[in-house]
Image 1 (cartoon, rainbow, N blue to C red):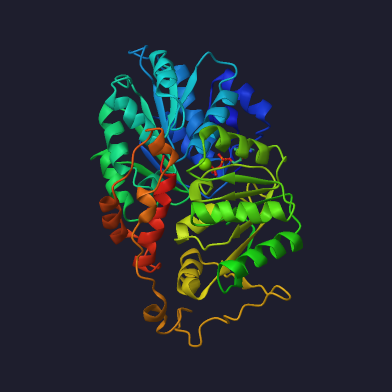
Image 2: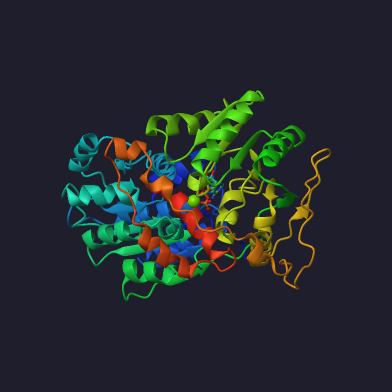
Amino acid sequence: MSSPQFAELLNNPQLLRAITELGYTSPTQVQEKAIPLAIEGKDLLVQSKTGSGKTAAFLLPSISRMLTEVSNNPLSTRILILTPTRELARQIVKNAQELLRYTTIKVGMICGGEELKYQKALLRKNPEIIVATPGRLAEHIAHKSTDFSGLEILILDEADRMMDMGLHEDLVKVVAQCPAEKQTLLFSATLEQKNLRQLIQDVMGDKKAERIVVDDAPNPIDHKMVLSDGNPHKDKLLVACLEKTPHQKAIIFANTRARVDELNQLLRRHGYAVSLLHGDITQDERKKALDRFRDKKTTVLVATDVAARGLDIDAVELVVNVDMAYSGDEYLHRIGRTGRAGQSGLAISFVTAKDWNLTKGIERYLSIQMEMLQIAGLTAAYKGPEKLKASGKAVGIKKKIIDKPKTPEKKVKDRLRDKKNVGKRRQASTLVSENKNADGFAPPKKKLVQKLDQLDDAE
Ligand code: ADP
Ligand code: MG
């Protein structure tokens, strides 16, 4: 049986015309599965790999419902889409505008880093669709500037990441503003974490959602690892990797803002055109950095995990984890910036003695094997653990290598957001408890330190 065409899934000529102009000839698997159920009004939990077209899988049926069904509360926002980062929100807005080209439906964006006053004016106009990050939206709710009384559809893209970032409280506040009688759609490439149960309960209550898991072949990404002795060694490795691996664009991930800044400097010194993205640069700089990378004015993007989720950037052929991702899920999202929509990609991770067990856990969790890569002249003194368990993990390594959790000094540090009094700080206590539900293969203490660092990028 051949797969259905868009015209069989949607009967809105305006939408079909926009789809054709975007060059989408037939629906992807996730679109084929999710669109009919979403149009029926079902609550859905949808899991499908990175780059598989999830955005259109939630936008198309939602817009179609808006075009077909008359609102009984015409002044209220009808669709709310929540995302973990501003960059992803912007991308979804753009995608929505492309699909809405032949309609009069308006879409507005509410994210951190922009003036509240301007956003209040936008909210007063009640755009039919709002794309938002939860932190800023919760602020508007506190100021009573939102009207979701007639909301029909709530969509959470990268729902699991919002839990990771400690945005749960804000999400709950937002959900409390929405009518109980609405459709709820949750999308991600990873929806299996235990702490999602709480989120699902909070956003969907006792309503039974249908789960769609699209189980198609993984993206053709080559996974490689290079053993490393620490930051000075990683710096040399990074320069060598970029030199030796032909790529149109590369994304480099590090775990702290400070390291991202250092790597940015390093690569600039080596003549690379670099874009920089983390939670402590201004919104305007964040936007410019990503635009320049999209437009090929820069070839390298150095970022924290703020860039790990959802970004759909053409021609990213290489992802380097200068610092290993803190979990299997986050590894999957980071490397999912390459190998999108049928293209191939290369992911290289630098692995120190501390990262060995985490790396083996990630390999097992994702059923992948990272091929060991040697870089001539830069072989690490670290050769991997002397003794291995059957799992591939090091025997007795934990005691030797676990760092004492550092006190989270960063959190009392000067931050742009604090200086400007925008956004708000998350409570460390909620994170500590969240760690209980972590994916289970990172040393918990290390994870706590890293999680606290990620807070810097919470929106
Ligand atoms: P995901 O959210 O699953 O990671 P995206 O929604 O960002 O994936 O889509 C990945 C890319 O595929 C985007 O560039 C998008 O425009 C494109 N795309 C989506 N649906 C289709 C389709 N049916 N045919 C061709 N390309 C598509
Ligand atoms: Mg996406």
